Amino acid sequence: SGATAEPRGAMVDIAVLLQAAQSPEDHVRQPAEKELHDSEVNHFAAFLGALVELLGTNSQPDQLRIAAALQIKRVLTGQDDLSQRTKADNWRNTLDDNSRGIVKNTCLSVLAGASVNVSKQAAQCVEAVARLELPDGNWSDLPEMLLKAIDQAASRDVHGTVGPLLALGYFANVAANCGFEIPEAQTNQLLGKISQGMNNSVPTEVQTAATQALSDTLEFAKHNMDSDNERNMIMSMIFTMTKAADPQTREKAFQCLTTVLQLYYHHLEPHMGDIWECTTAAIKNSAEEEGVARQALNFWDEMALEEAEREAAMNESGTQPSDIDRSRNFTQKVRDQITQLVLHYCLLQQPEEPDDEEGQDDTLYAAAEHCFSNLCACLHQSILEPTMQFVKENHGHGDWRRRQAALFAFGAIINALDAAQVRPYVAELFESVLSRSNGQGEPVG
Image (cartoon, rainbow, N blue to C red):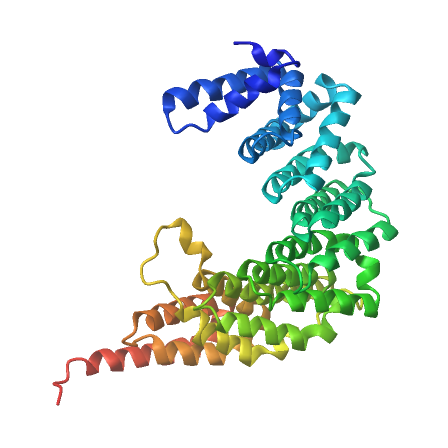
């Protein structure tokens, strides 16, 4: 049927189609999916218009409005560069200014006024449109609109700010990727709104969304991070969220710390004591919250990588780096403690039987392998002694986890260092292996 070609009355048909497309019955779902696809291809403007109208209608059930938002995101988002260009061409050439304006205004209105679940989906629609508009320098008032959306949502219920905060983060991410400039004054306003969501008095979902939004906005906060007072406030907000009630918020907070490291390494020195304290506490609590522990360890993985790269760049150039570019040797300063933590704790957390191959990368053990390889690259010879001591003590251990950790550590250190540096230790290790295998034949007691 070509009902979706007609803008008027199309909403009834689109609602029926979206409902059918969610059916578990193949004979109901598949024809609906085909009709949605055909409508998109043959009647793009009318199809998108009907979806947007449905999304913006408060009397429609949330489930249908969410389905409409997912479709809007799908039809406006390419899976790769080529399909993204096709979507952008469709957006520019098939829709007139007025139609594009309706899409943008409806998404913003739903963002500020709908239920949290619908608003969160509208945030993804805002992101999809921003990807199409910002690279061309359009929708320059979007940051201002997002600030208004946060205020509007907050005036009803602070929980309602989840969607607008998510949208703010998505916007900042798109802006950073396409070179869209956010003026300093506006960044200050955005950070002000984010800070209201990063405290213990608001619902956990707001904390999580605000922490993610900060992570995405930090790239535009150079002037704030250059100011000691403002940086202290930002870091204090992140530290507060590393102790938040919800594990998901804590994960986002440690991801946020890693973003600070990647963007503002040269500003970290005054904060390293607090960072060491909160990251190590989270890592040691991995039995309770492995996801949080993994993100906390990832900070040190990134730190070792960053400092190894800074040292390599200095050696390559043969000149002293600028103050911003030089390594502060943070990893070296906690060498013994971080090596002990990774070898004697993190590398012993192998899951008994991984549920599936894909899930293996999401474990603290997998993060520890990656981190230890970067520690070897960063610390060089200074990590050799404690590593080989660990290998010597554990390569023949009765606990398979210790044997596997010793084998991995041995491989990582051999891979990272010159053969001449490792050779004496290898010889000693072989002697230990031989004496142990010779001793195995002895009668017991």
